[in-house]
Image (cartoon, rainbow, N blue to C red; front, top):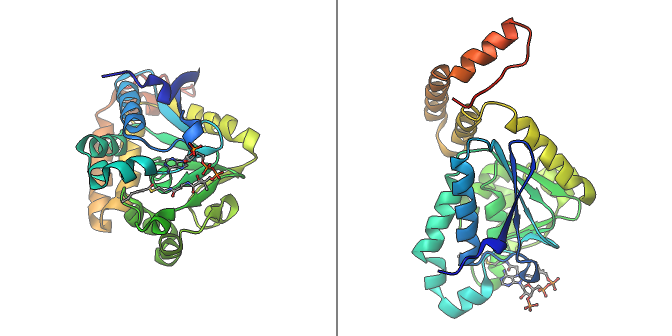
Length: 260
Ligand code: HXC
């Protein structure tokens, strides 16, 4: 199996932070099977590495990602969409336990938007553009978009996006709650790394629990979500870091978290 490492670049720009860059700029980072499996592998390494507390995901060139690989879909039809390895990559990316920030530098279209929706915090450059253009190809989102988009932006706006395929600019995306901040292009990565650094200096035993709790709000009915939150907070009491955090407060010093 040839190595596809160059499809997703990995850097360590700051303590505790892993920066991953989708790197197929000549195809606007279209999500080929190889690119997705490389991303999955990078995240598996990040998950196992206790020194990594937060991941920032961005795209090289003018796109975050322009969606599933249309040429592959044309060549392989259903087999390209239902490819077990491709689907396994999506599931693994979805299951990544640590916080992940999308720094959306340009187009986030179709599967590219669906990938951003798997991230926990979405930041956009002012030149970013969002759409689910599948309808123009005689299709519609198939990697989570029809479910996650309405939960974020409401049914009416999600329907409008899915049924028209129209482009949404960064300011409108922020107004609809799709992204939390819009930044000048040159500020996007510094800001993403700043937030990632703020997260990475917390306990790596606790931040994944917090991520799971907040995610439950979108995935479970309220009573179940509250039960999940409760169980995760109970789990957090079992960590040394929780004791350390409380003790450090009482002793008026900074906590020293050990990730356990
Ligand atoms: C494969 C892609 C691609 C894609 C762009 N490219 N998007 N290749 N899959 N999704 C390639 C182009 O073929 C071209 O390669 C190069 O990237 C640059 O793109 P251009 O079209 O020349 O750039 P531009 O004219 O600036 O237009 C940008 C664009 C346009 C508006 C973003 O590329 C576009 O509409 N792309 C498709 C977006 C889309 O429909 N995404 C959803 C895909 S379906 P060459 O070799 O010609 O230079 C999906 C979910 C499917 O995501 C699930 C189904 C169930």
